Length: 118
Image (cartoon, rainbow, N blue to C red; front, top):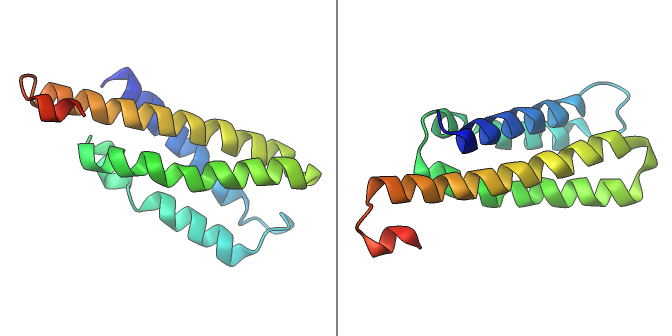
């Protein structure tokens, strides 16, 4: 297993746990929105564990939603600072590692094809 894939999977799992924590009673978050955030993270699970390049490409961009949520909660809600900080850091790690791992998969698949490098 490639180190970038390990970082991607770990940060995806941390992000999943953080979003699931919003489903707990007393979190102050709407459970319907929290459930939607958890379901959205579960959709790419099969492709992440199967090292599918296409999945890693779009998961990187999907995490920008979680980054925006983390930053907005970090600024606006002092009660959720730990959640917001964890969401921001794990979404940044997931974004960077998934994009670079997708690039690695592309280079590994077609080492002589110049279109695979973009």
